[in-house]
Image 1 (tube, helix red, strand yellow):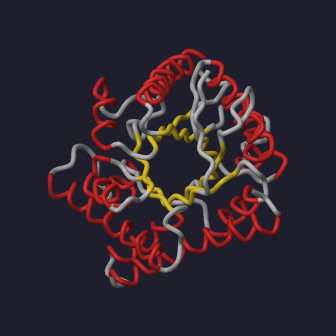
Image 2: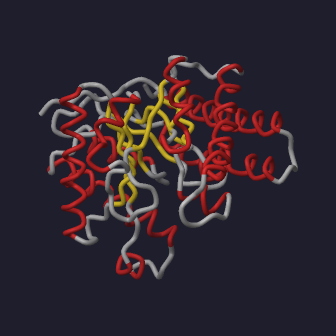
Length: 310
């Protein structure tokens, strides 16, 4: 087993959302025409401006990163590469319950053409869910994992989501918060272990927010098990409100092995909605996004420093 891992601080502004942009932001369904595609690309350019404004405002370039898709963000990806930014690009089809490659059998060619710092996948995997689905997904993910390691170019970022099964929700009277607090952490550990056993070897795990420090510690312990000492975790925002995201960030930041975060919708969604509705100017939208991103960076680093974490 060969492990690379990633150990530097990493503060990601992700805006690789595709389906949620098409339907949630713009209200479109079905195949997009060229004009619709251009409108979404323009919205993503605005978020990218917010990221760059945050860098100008003091966020260290060595710790900052973006995550954006090729479909709507190809120009951004090329610009980020030219400017030496750390950047990630997704490999999965958007909005599917089952992981599959966005570009099918051409997935490797697309990764090589873009050469992102990280190749990212978003995967829904519940170890008590459909066993055949889990096996199918794990086989595809092992194929990607093996390719990335053999090519030794882009690192492997794995975003793990563990959606509740009906029987699991029933145990907590359909209380989603109770599921997140009391059931999901254990399922996440099992999911990581099953994927590792299937030969899936991410360099970085992108983890849903956890309420308790001990659960964050268990996640790091699992990610690093079996000689994976250079593998680390980042926390994701799930589109939650500012207060919830800050709570997750500060909890994770106190645990060695959590090196950063990926917070997207909480950062950019409302400013983007307001800008599209002509309630605020482009400059105001950019500054709001930059300010929110800086707030999350400051909160993570303050919590980390306070805990003496490294």
